[in-house]
Image 1 (cartoon, helix red, strand yellow):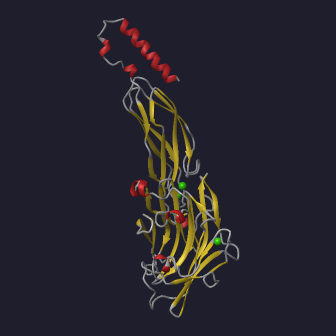
Image 2 (cartoon, helix red, strand yellow):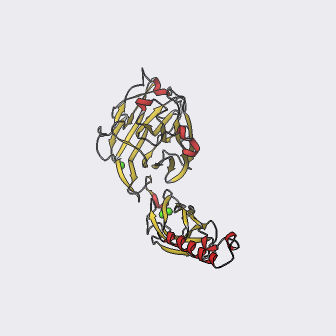
Image 3 (cartoon, protein in one colour):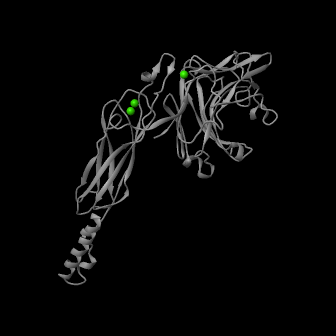
Length: 402
Ligand SMILES: [Ca+2]
Ligand SMILES: [Ca+2]
Ligand SMILES: [Ca+2]
């Protein structure tokens, strides 16, 4: 409203000045009073550091003008917490007449906790004497802390709450049996529909306590060997618990050895309608047991019937994933998947890198936990493989943005 009034005033002044001088002389010269620049604020991404510092957001004008430009701004926590991760004051600022930019400083507050990357938003409003082309900027705080503060005796531990999220569903495995309101078993060897579970795997899945149990606050899935046959377990939450977007934390200690293939993964809830891999697959964690210090995160997609196209990355530790618990996290937004181990980011898949036609990940997915034996990727167990082999899961927590 006020800028409209200003334009009206400027035109009025021009009109009067024209009438007071020679016609045609000043009409060709731009009147500086008429310049209404466009204003934008740029996104910013910086390491957290150990001491407080200012994250500088550049506010740019398309050109200088003779009027000062005043702007109000507010800071909003998305996954970064106001007053904890960044200074939470808003306010106003002025771009002096003749200047084309302003540096807006937002204090970034340090801590010693390892975290996933955190976001806040700078929102501009009530801009006078400029039109606005971009009135919001995302500030990303990249973590630079080591794992020490988040490490307990048996491994890495994530917080029970995350700012900007609420817990949608989870399982701490504090009972004495699997809650069948949340999970289904896959049983057998996959035959006749998908013998070897699509990968020429060797195991037969059971629901026997030797292969799957809930005790001591953990879900344990154990691969066993009897003669030349192998038994293990596989559970999933299809039609019972499915999700779209959020942060998923799974704390697990992995098995190891040639031919052992633990996985914490997801499939599109629409798999029965569209088939695999058209439904999409998100492998939050896979490991092949002959490389026990390396896990993998992967996204798969493709036409029904396969083969799948995929993109992923691996994450390596100095120690074996079977030594201690680690937390495998997926931070999943519209058009973006980000994989973490112990809150260290190691892979991002997004619309830009996978492509709009191929993106299957803006829909409901369900969770799957299993330990396979043998198969195309790891190959068969050999004389070095020790049985039984167990994957312990301490918790699975699904958080969604509030
Ligand atoms: Ca922080
Ligand atoms: Ca930190
Ligand atoms: Ca637990």
